[in-house]
Amino acid sequence: MSWSFLIVLPRLYRGPIAPGDLDLLLGVFDRNFARTNDFRSSLRAAICAAYLSPRHLFASNVATARRPGTPLSPHELATRLSLFLWSSTPDSELSAAADRGELGESAVLQRQVNRLLDHPYASELSANFAFQWLHLYNMGLNAPDQDLYNYDESLQRAMVQESLRFFHEVLRTDGSIRLFID
Image 1 (cartoon, one colour):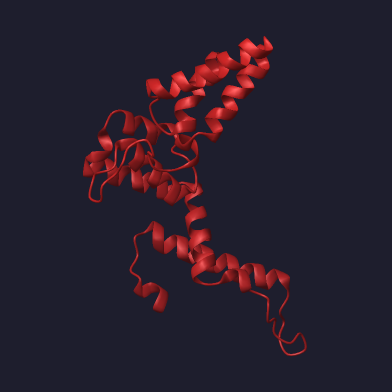
Image 2: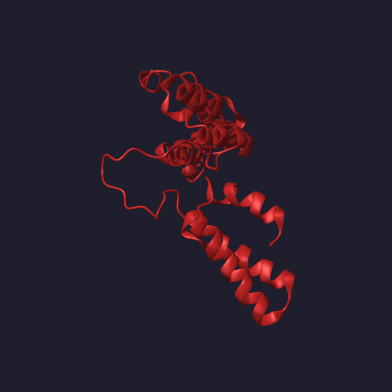
Protein backbone atom coordinates (compact mmCIF):
# COMPACT_ATOMS: atom_id res chain seq x y z
CA MET A 1 0.00 0.00 0.00
CA SER A 2 1.18 3.55 -0.70
CA TRP A 3 2.93 5.42 2.14
CA SER A 4 1.16 8.67 1.24
CA PHE A 5 -2.19 6.95 1.88
CA LEU A 6 -1.00 5.83 5.31
CA ILE A 7 0.09 9.39 6.10
CA VAL A 8 -3.32 10.84 5.14
CA LEU A 9 -5.32 8.16 6.96
CA PRO A 10 -5.11 9.72 10.48
CA ARG A 11 -6.48 12.99 9.09
CA LEU A 12 -9.22 11.14 7.21
CA TYR A 13 -10.18 9.27 10.39
CA ARG A 14 -9.61 12.35 12.60
CA GLY A 15 -7.39 10.47 15.02
CA PRO A 16 -4.96 7.61 15.47
CA ILE A 17 -5.37 4.54 13.31
CA ALA A 18 -6.31 1.42 15.21
CA PRO A 19 -4.62 -1.83 14.09
CA GLY A 20 -8.05 -3.23 13.15
CA ASP A 21 -8.67 -0.26 10.83
CA LEU A 22 -5.39 -0.81 9.04
CA ASP A 23 -5.94 -4.58 8.87
CA LEU A 24 -9.34 -4.01 7.24
CA LEU A 25 -7.92 -1.66 4.60
CA LEU A 26 -4.95 -3.93 3.92
CA GLY A 27 -7.41 -6.81 3.51
CA VAL A 28 -9.39 -4.82 0.92
CA PHE A 29 -6.14 -4.03 -0.89
CA ASP A 30 -4.89 -7.64 -0.75
CA ARG A 31 -8.19 -9.18 -1.92
CA ASN A 32 -8.44 -6.74 -4.81
CA PHE A 33 -4.77 -7.24 -5.78
CA ALA A 34 -5.14 -11.07 -5.70
CA ARG A 35 -8.15 -10.77 -8.02
CA THR A 36 -6.83 -8.12 -10.46
CA ASN A 37 -3.03 -8.02 -10.01
CA ASP A 38 -3.41 -4.23 -10.46
CA PHE A 39 -1.73 -2.07 -7.81
CA ARG A 40 -3.56 1.16 -8.72
CA SER A 41 -7.06 -0.34 -8.68
CA SER A 42 -6.26 -2.15 -5.42
CA LEU A 43 -5.08 1.08 -3.83
CA ARG A 44 -8.20 2.83 -5.15
CA ALA A 45 -10.38 0.11 -3.55
CA ALA A 46 -8.63 0.59 -0.19
CA ILE A 47 -9.03 4.38 -0.41
CA CYS A 48 -12.73 3.96 -1.24
CA ALA A 49 -13.10 1.65 1.76
CA ALA A 50 -11.46 4.28 3.99
CA TYR A 51 -13.80 7.00 2.72
CA LEU A 52 -16.82 4.75 3.26
CA SER A 53 -15.70 3.72 6.74
CA PRO A 54 -17.83 4.82 9.71
CA ARG A 55 -14.62 6.28 11.18
CA HIS A 56 -14.65 8.81 8.32
CA LEU A 57 -18.39 9.26 7.82
CA PHE A 58 -19.38 9.85 11.44
CA ALA A 59 -17.99 12.41 13.87
CA SER A 60 -18.11 10.12 16.88
CA ASN A 61 -16.16 6.97 17.45
CA VAL A 62 -18.79 4.46 16.41
CA ALA A 63 -16.52 1.55 17.28
CA THR A 64 -17.06 2.11 21.00
CA ALA A 65 -20.41 2.13 22.72
CA ARG A 66 -20.77 5.42 24.54
CA ARG A 67 -22.82 5.72 27.67
CA PRO A 68 -24.26 9.13 28.56
CA GLY A 69 -21.81 11.10 30.69
CA THR A 70 -18.76 9.28 29.33
CA PRO A 71 -16.09 11.86 28.50
CA LEU A 72 -15.02 12.32 24.91
CA SER A 73 -11.60 11.15 23.82
CA PRO A 74 -9.19 13.98 22.92
CA HIS A 75 -9.67 13.27 19.21
CA GLU A 76 -13.46 13.18 19.51
CA LEU A 77 -13.33 16.53 21.32
CA ALA A 78 -11.04 18.00 18.65
CA THR A 79 -13.37 16.74 15.91
CA ARG A 80 -16.48 18.14 17.54
CA LEU A 81 -14.80 21.50 18.18
CA SER A 82 -13.58 21.74 14.63
CA LEU A 83 -16.85 20.65 13.05
CA PHE A 84 -18.82 23.07 15.22
CA LEU A 85 -16.53 26.10 14.87
CA TRP A 86 -15.13 25.55 11.38
CA SER A 87 -17.53 23.10 9.70
CA SER A 88 -14.38 21.15 8.87
CA THR A 89 -11.97 18.57 10.24
CA PRO A 90 -9.32 19.44 12.87
CA ASP A 91 -6.19 21.15 11.58
CA SER A 92 -2.68 19.93 12.40
CA GLU A 93 -2.36 22.10 15.53
CA LEU A 94 -5.64 20.90 17.05
CA SER A 95 -4.84 17.29 16.10
CA ALA A 96 -1.40 17.60 17.69
CA ALA A 97 -2.95 18.91 20.92
CA ALA A 98 -5.32 15.92 20.86
CA ASP A 99 -2.39 13.55 20.18
CA ARG A 100 -0.60 14.94 23.26
CA GLY A 101 -3.78 14.66 25.37
CA GLU A 102 -3.70 18.38 26.20
CA LEU A 103 -7.31 19.19 25.32
CA GLY A 104 -8.40 18.02 28.77
CA GLU A 105 -6.58 21.00 30.31
CA SER A 106 -8.96 23.96 30.48
CA ALA A 107 -6.27 26.55 29.61
CA VAL A 108 -5.24 24.62 26.48
CA LEU A 109 -8.85 24.03 25.50
CA GLN A 110 -9.68 27.74 25.91
CA ARG A 111 -6.61 28.72 23.87
CA GLN A 112 -7.59 26.32 21.08
CA VAL A 113 -11.21 27.54 21.04
CA ASN A 114 -10.02 31.17 20.83
CA ARG A 115 -7.60 30.25 18.04
CA LEU A 116 -10.35 28.49 16.10
CA LEU A 117 -12.73 31.43 16.56
CA ASP A 118 -10.10 33.92 15.40
CA HIS A 119 -9.53 31.99 12.18
CA PRO A 120 -11.44 32.94 9.00
CA TYR A 121 -12.96 29.44 8.92
CA ALA A 122 -15.06 30.39 11.96
CA SER A 123 -17.17 32.55 9.70
CA GLU A 124 -18.74 29.26 8.55
CA LEU A 125 -20.28 28.80 12.00
CA SER A 126 -21.57 32.36 11.92
CA ALA A 127 -22.94 31.97 8.43
CA ASN A 128 -24.55 28.57 9.02
CA PHE A 129 -26.10 29.50 12.34
CA ALA A 130 -27.10 33.07 11.48
CA PHE A 131 -28.63 32.06 8.15
CA GLN A 132 -30.86 29.56 9.93
CA TRP A 133 -31.59 31.61 13.05
CA LEU A 134 -32.29 34.90 11.27
CA HIS A 135 -33.77 33.28 8.14
CA LEU A 136 -31.33 35.26 5.99
CA TYR A 137 -31.96 32.91 3.09
CA ASN A 138 -35.41 34.58 2.86
CA MET A 139 -33.85 37.99 2.27
CA GLY A 140 -35.30 39.47 -0.88
CA LEU A 141 -38.36 37.24 -1.08
CA ASN A 142 -40.54 40.26 -0.36
CA ALA A 143 -38.51 43.10 -1.79
CA PRO A 144 -39.83 46.62 -1.15
CA ASP A 145 -41.47 48.64 -3.89
CA GLN A 146 -38.75 49.99 -6.22
CA ASP A 147 -40.73 53.24 -6.71
CA LEU A 148 -40.80 53.95 -2.98
CA TYR A 149 -37.38 52.69 -1.85
CA ASN A 150 -33.89 52.63 -3.29
CA TYR A 151 -33.53 48.85 -2.91
CA ASP A 152 -31.42 46.66 -5.17
CA GLU A 153 -29.39 43.45 -5.05
CA SER A 154 -26.27 45.19 -3.74
CA LEU A 155 -28.22 46.59 -0.77
CA GLN A 156 -29.72 43.15 -0.17
CA ARG A 157 -26.24 41.53 -0.16
CA ALA A 158 -24.97 44.28 2.17
CA MET A 159 -27.83 43.63 4.59
CA VAL A 160 -27.00 39.93 4.72
CA GLN A 161 -23.25 40.61 5.13
CA GLU A 162 -23.87 43.13 7.91
CA SER A 163 -25.98 40.59 9.81
CA LEU A 164 -23.36 37.86 9.36
CA ARG A 165 -20.47 40.08 10.41
CA PHE A 166 -22.32 41.37 13.45
CA PHE A 167 -23.21 37.84 14.54
CA HIS A 168 -19.60 36.70 14.05
CA GLU A 169 -18.22 39.66 16.01
CA VAL A 170 -20.53 38.95 18.96
CA LEU A 171 -19.44 35.30 18.84
CA ARG A 172 -15.73 36.10 18.44
CA THR A 173 -15.67 38.60 21.33
CA ASP A 174 -17.88 36.42 23.55
CA GLY A 175 -20.42 39.22 23.62
CA SER A 176 -23.68 39.12 25.50
CA ILE A 177 -26.83 37.82 23.85
CA ARG A 178 -28.32 41.19 24.78
CA LEU A 179 -26.30 42.77 21.97
CA PHE A 180 -28.71 41.12 19.53
CA ILE A 181 -31.68 42.70 21.29
CA ASP A 182 -30.08 46.17 21.50
